[in-house]
Length: 364
Image 1: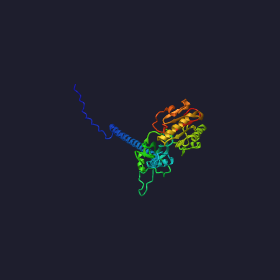
Image 2: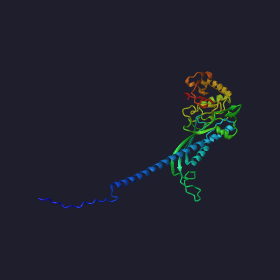
Image 3: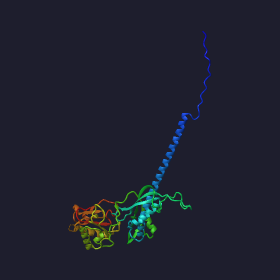
Image 4: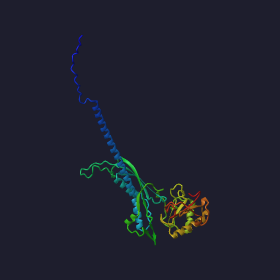
């Protein structure tokens, strides 16, 4: 039996693959498109974050400038006092400070929203100023003559409203009176000599930014007498017992003090209830002269000896205290006084003034 032969068939032709029909190619295109979109989104994000950080930085710069401008008025006032031969005792002037702070805030693309003063001398000077600003961008129309640049978006106060707010910021600045000032034969001497020109005086007064406000809010209602005798009505709402002690002191010693401060808004203190008066024995922050020191001791000795009949609660002077409500013995001041903690400030340590409390209840 013979073998059957299968007729030969032509070999199949290879199939041609059409361009653009490859699945891998489609995936690569989609991946490239997705990466492009992601990169674009990331770029926009970085731009927005950078712009936000830049805006916050500009707003903080505006706050710093406004705070320094606000205390510059106190610096000028203190410098003028030095030139005039008076120990510098600058007082916070809200109207002047606010005007200067507003000017510098707007010059740096922000708007002033708040300003307040404080100090560490019981609210008497306001040498520490805190400002708050909000950053603002003001869109403006270009001028045909090119006088207004396309990127001029700083608010200058002529706008009715600011549409774009770019963050808030605050800053605190302080003006510090030079401690190297004192009296020499009646003349005010600073840095070893007399200061006769304003520029030299200003260089002695330090102005800089700080992180914390003062312990006491500035209180413009605090009353100080202008001479050696001040009646009770000029010392605020004094308690009747404190007023009687004050009048008795003036009858006994006349003008023993430079000026005086009485009732003020200071919760937790005898000053708040009108049961305390501060008798200044030196300029604010200075040390009393030998004569004033002797006068202070003489007055305090008399107060302690008559404390029970007068209703005196206690005395603080020269970083020492005598507290009748705690049972401290009656006797000469130098013998019965007790030391107090050092607060590193002549006013806080009661070096420049006598604090006398009279009334009811414990000494506060």
